[in-house]
Picture 1 (cartoon, rainbow, N blue to C red):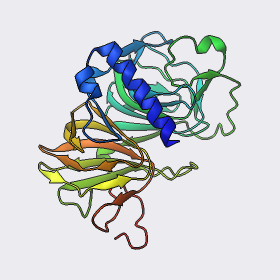
Picture 2: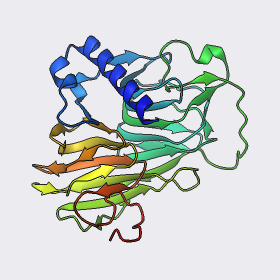
Picture 3: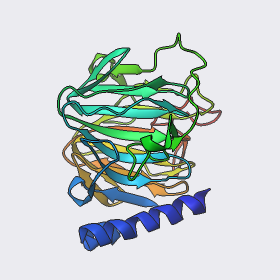
Length: 290
């Protein structure tokens, strides 16, 4: 799995370089397994849905995984589809409406396996998106060309639990900040992957200027979206609108020089290099680790 992820990342970087011409920004890496992507280096592409575009950091047709931006013009409509696994939409502008209601800027929209809906943007909308599984559309005509959802495919849609609403919409500003043992870092737990087969975490972090975490090694993939400020991982720096993809087994030194607000998706607890401490991404403390 690690080798396949690395191959996909390397291939995607080659495509990024060819499309954007930003060879210096994309190719230069200061640490193995740590990849930063600035917003200006991403390539926007029209999708098969009118009025919808995407800018991918990574995308896989095989397993439906995606990280990047999605944008919607007014009245753009996704069409009916069903999620086969977790999908995250952090709303930066505008909103999307389905039969449940409307998710708006500042909210994290989460769809679990089985979520079935069609969403429309009544105003221009921009979101940072992470998909973790394929999406089913009802016909081949619904998945032509560059699809809105990575791994979109035609299939029979059966909503096994129609009484369950399709969206978990979390207004991040309503969540309380919790202190951590790391000076200068606060955390909000956004989603603990309850009702899924995965033991992962989605959190929002706030780092004060000049804050720094001790070095750690990832045991599973880790991804970031920088909402505001600056974030540096192992010498690779990104500002607002940037993304990070970190492979399993990477050694990470994490800091912010001038303050940072970011989202993180961690697929497993980290291993500390020089100390015993709780996990920074809200995994439960293990024996001997706190």
